[in-house]
Amino acid sequence: MSNPFLKQVFNKDKTFRPKRKFEPGTQRFELHKRAQASLNAGLDLRLAVQLPPGEDLHDWVAVHVVDFFNRVNLIYGTVSDGCTEQSCPVMSGGPKYEYRWQDEHKFRKPTALSAPKYVDLLMDWIEVQINNEDLFPTSVGTPFPKNFLQAVKKILSRLFRVFVHVYIHHFDRIAQMGAEAHVNTCYKHFYYFVREFGLIDTKELEPLKEMTMRMCH
Image 1: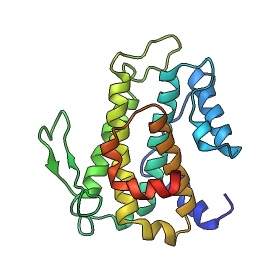
Image 2: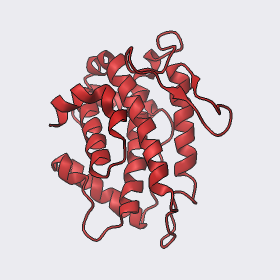
Image 3: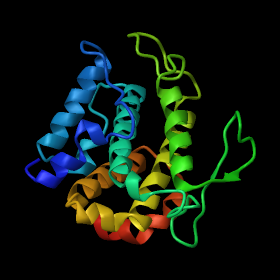
């Protein structure tokens, strides 16, 4: 990462919240290292996301969900000082798409929130799930629950909305920092992964459809 702006942008101080790490010596840590090695080697992202022979799909997906959570945190952290209650009173992706927050606790009905509030609640909500041993088991031999992929689809669909908001409302900030290529690579990695395993409905991808066609096809 030779670009000095990127070093500044993607250093640990700019992370939106602490990174979730994998425990050394675990199968998931080894998978994480393998996935990172593929990316660092400049492997075609379409190939890099494919399930390695002999590996468990759920483990591979779990590793990537945590990785994407960390990466999207970093990306949002770079624009968060310009994403305020005043500048972004609604969590949106342009005039056609507005995202409302709903959870099992305080917001039982879809509720319009500012972008920073929405993203904060979203990251808290994801963090609780990826730290939940029942949903993301870390012990070797502990099976994933039957609803794992269903839960992952919801996590990734909501993470995608952060990409939508950043690209449509804050891309000038990303470009100004010289981080455009890095963010585009993160997005392409995310996009190829969710398409490879059918983890996001096509209609959710609509807001960035034109950009994605140019970038990923």
